[in-house]
Length: 237
Image 1 (cartoon, rainbow, N blue to C red):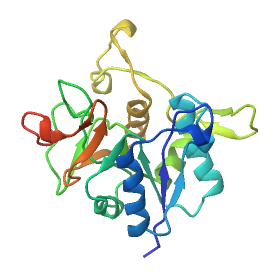
Image 2 (tube, rainbow, N blue to C red):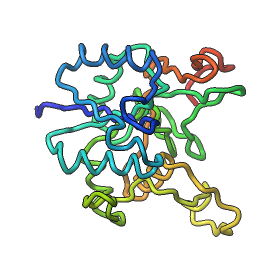
Image 3 (cartoon, rainbow, N blue to C red):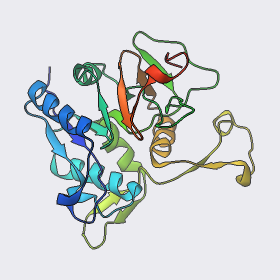
């Protein structure tokens, strides 16, 4: 079996890289990940700090494909999120799917899951639930998935750098009924976030999106560290 290599990708916000702020929970999680996976590579905001999130994520994906060809997986984790048990990362890598997220909530009341279910909702398949989209606050993608998507999406030059970057996270307009062939007027469609837009593109290529139902607790820092423990029901769905 080929050896797996994980890249941790975190867009951060700052005018200068050294001034970027991250949550303590995120920083402590990185230390645990490095003990669990000592060969992991961290790709943080040194290449994205002055970008909007769309160009930042596009730039990360392009850099991985260009400069880290031996990588097999990318953990997209935001600087305000961390998991309770870092062992879920290796578990997710071993699932053999291209896009899988650990379930987490938004960070204010009323709490809700960030992932979007299919309509009608899919049935569980082992430890996986197929969904329509996931947030990229704590999501694992295969590098082969990034490559496949980058090959078909429009490229642009990442000025002032000379690199050609695929627009795999660019905002899309969408409506749940469009994929069912229903004609929806443009003004009735929503402008999706960059992560949901990525998921729409992936699904059009036949790449399913999953939630790992054994992902445990993922914290999302806002006014405090929000988790599903505070959400009525607190179950995947």
